[in-house]
Image 1 (cartoon, helix red, strand yellow):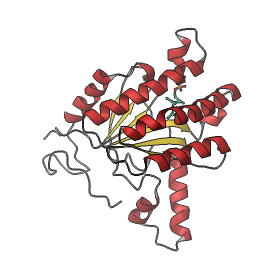
Image 2: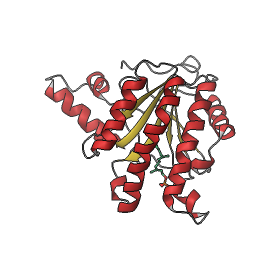
Image 3: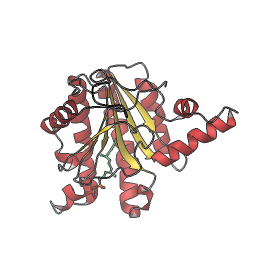
Length: 242
Ligand code: FPP
């Protein structure tokens, strides 16, 4: 039995910005700037296809180890993009959520995050979760610490409720662009039963046609959730309380 429905939640590792820039003899930050435009197009395309949640990996816990110039360029770009794009995202009905460790972020970035979240909190057309200073291992550890601090039993349900993405169901489809086929510490907990789609397109080149290919591929998968063929209703997600 195949799964013909459009995914409710799509998550993306936006990889390949640096290579996109290098191939054009441009500085890597030029690729990240194109990456912001690609993200805007992708959010609109997801909304047009009835996808309700888009989660993207914008800056990982490990990205601090990049050259200082690139890290500060990414922080500047992030703060500038927030200031510039929030009014449009707000009027498009997008709710922005920032997922990750707030420690270590500058006052400017923290202010941009707080303003963007406050400005879009009442929007419900598309939830855009931006994973920033995020790692899947960080999320599991912070969730476990919260469960322990509350004196609750360390159960799957309690951990699930303490995870940083507890406000949305798990992603049915995880896309990684840029040709690499690895998880890179993204959504380790939440992707337990996700379908993966690896695209050779570099993130700035990711377009509607490639998104449609990913959705088509998802539609052709049989999702068994550990059961045997035919036991699940088509497209049914596992019932994990959030
Ligand atoms: C990976 O490509 C991409 C990143 C580490 C940054 C992604 C960030 C954006 C698209 C900007 C997001 C901005 C906002 C406002 C949400 P890479 O640099 O690893 O590329 P490479 O593998 O070709 O070197």
